[in-house]
Length: 434
Ligand code: S3P
Image (cartoon, rainbow, N blue to C red; front, side, top):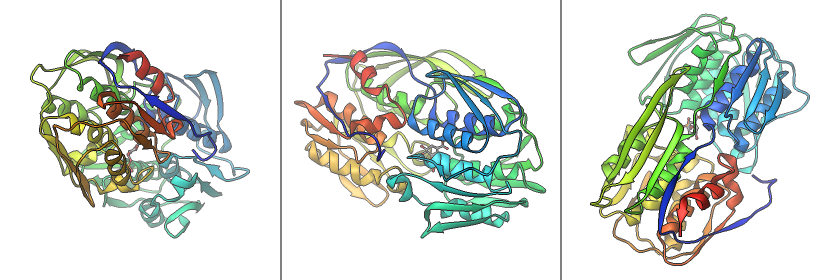
């Protein structure tokens, strides 16, 4: 985000939230389709590709590696892949703000016979990369980091299969190992203590790879070629989360979202919403390339919002939704506590610290832990100046907290929303009744 111009958005309190919208394409799936399309043989056609800046950073990297990207309109793209052989890029691969780009793509390029340098913006340069260096160097790649961080230099070459246990729940690390395993000698196997989002597994299969699962162990044989696909990216549930949580704030809210990604490894929020006192009706559901896509309707139950405690595996599965849950927590009856979420401190910002700082600005009480927050319910918040810390999810989460505050809220660094959801503020305006 360092190159975009800082903007401030004023968010006024709302009376209710009502409407029916289609949420733009999922960021996680867009990254994976872009990466695998850029590697595959043939031309992949994608519709409803994410409008977020992050997946566009991935597309630019794929072009630098030899893929051809044609953008038909904002969300329809054709990617002609490098058919398994990337070229030596002319300069560094710029991953912008995107940890997904840097970590997942590292796995794919580690097997290619070139030297690659991956760079990112200030936030990405602070994020831990040792977690991918470790398995990829076990497979035979040489990777140089600066004190565990980007810039990262990958000396690619032939890789050998490994058996890997993921020490931290991370779909990005899992994907890096699978993408490297696809090209390694032998069969790479991997198990995760917490089952993280499985979009890479579905995407690899869609592009023609064979991937086996036995219990919680995944395995992928090396030397597989990928073939282009046609696909529509489902709507992003993590973007929808802001409006789903906003709908819980008002007794007469009514929100309908169609073409929404409902992959069970991403949908823990829907269960939490039900526990809190939201009513979710699944109106339609179908499957494309292993991903569930549906239409849902959300209302709040007349009894209002209860509270919830989130810990263990659930925290990992909800990691991207915790900031917005924290933002609505003061308006619940019993509060929201989340623990075992230390990973939040190494996201696009230290999200525990920034949530705490902004809750405090709005006058909320809470307890901060190293691995989470306990936020009591039954509180009244006032409008305040919010610091997004150039973190997209913080900018959007506190725009939702603002809807029930007294007075207006000023979101500084609101432009960060464009990392995953450039249309966020126009959707907010459309859905909020004032
Ligand atoms: C993502 C995985 C998660 C998530 C991120 C996107 C992905 O990160 O927080 O926004 O697309 O695989 P980790 O894998 O680092 O937990």
